[in-house]
Length: 160
Image (cartoon, rainbow, N blue to C red; front, top):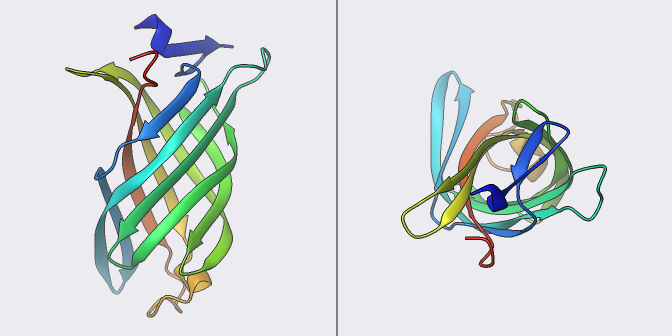
């Protein structure tokens, strides 16, 4: 399994390649407005890109689309800063309801695991989304939507 990971400066990441995000993984979003509202959804797909062409730094990007009962949201990272603890700081853009806004998120890298028929990286994406920016009904009070998505990214075909 060592070919499925890369370690640089004591920071482990998945190995180089395009890791497709699996469809239909669970997404849960909660919002408190007097009482807690929970929104359930699924991943629609995406890609985790890992490039090791720069020997002195990590080059990682993430594109993921999720569908919740409030609509489809697409996240595109501009910068990911991995850490040795596995919690990665992510800056990017979120698109929903025809609106594009800057978005900060946290990506928890949990490792690469060998499943019965393939290998996959397991990541958990966490973001606080300001729904008012998207003009979503009932979001004027500025309670952010807390989104948690467990992502499984299948190893590139040449490494699985």
